[in-house]
Image (tube, rainbow, N blue to C red; front, side, top):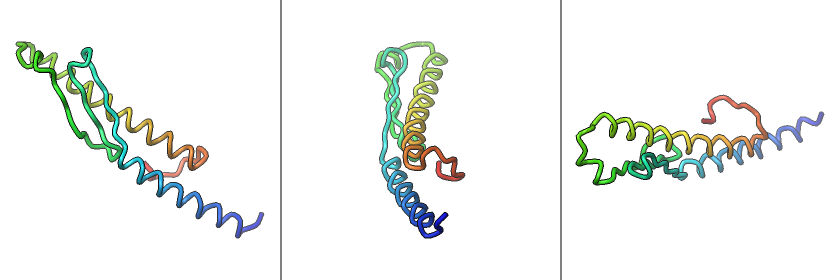
Length: 102
């Protein structure tokens, strides 16, 4: 096994991982629930960018149902962005599990 070849491969993977992490940081995914009544948009850095609520829901007396939809939409958007980020990193690292990447 050629150590220089291995080091070059490691440097390439390191560069690819850095590139993908930059791409993931710019990533945005949305997720809607309640037939589009609540929509959340999450960013690749794991933060929620926006949360949109249909005006019709704001007139309802059932605050508990609205709260549940808000949580579901936010969790869905965060999950979507995490899945895409993981997929992109797995493509770069050929499925290697490298701690601390995400």
